[in-house]
Image 1 (cartoon, rainbow, N blue to C red):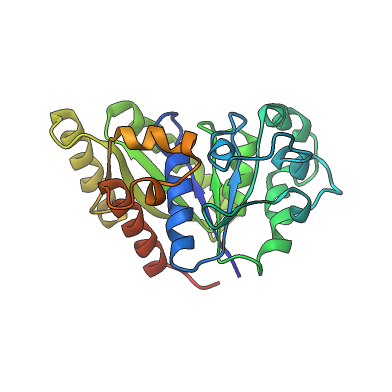
Image 2 (spheres, helix red, strand yellow):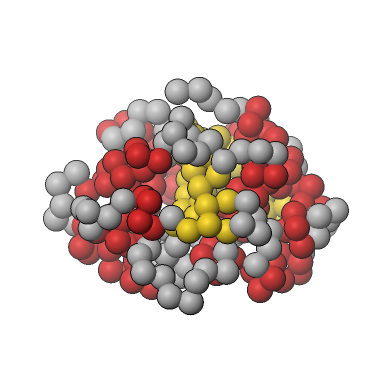
Length: 256
């Protein structure tokens, strides 16, 4: 059975998509069967995957059409060794379409049930919001991974996300857990970054990984190349960080 990880944060530009893509690629590199899900209407994860010019169906159709199945929307990204479910701007309208549906918070979980035995990990790249789409991701997930840029506004966004997580855990998904907090875009010489990270470690303890992902221009170059950082710059600090993250995720892997 697959373990489902939502990569989530209530702030944009903190490395959610970068983390989802590179964690997925790092897990695939060590033999895990990985499905990535783009749940953001901006479609950045989809762009990484070099999708076909025309996408007949996307995550939008999986959510709003009762007859669409995972098999109908899954694409392959052989260059990364993963499968993925794409997204495009059409997803922006899904929230309003689902609002009157019965069981609207669990649509994604129910649809993914059929894919559980096909994958070892399902990784969901969430949008920077706390709307019904993100609630669907949290209900479908076993664990949440939080990429945290070491700055005050990102810290506030994380606190809002964790409050929402607790509400979802209490009412809709009792198995939901925080798997870890990953420092991203880290500037080790910046005093503000050091102070924020110290405060997070003091409050959340060993939930904060003892390594982070430093800021690098190479991450900005990888989407155009259609590669993960593990392929694009395999010996870089970024590649080492995401390999370490994959190892830690496997070590913390909870059996159903």
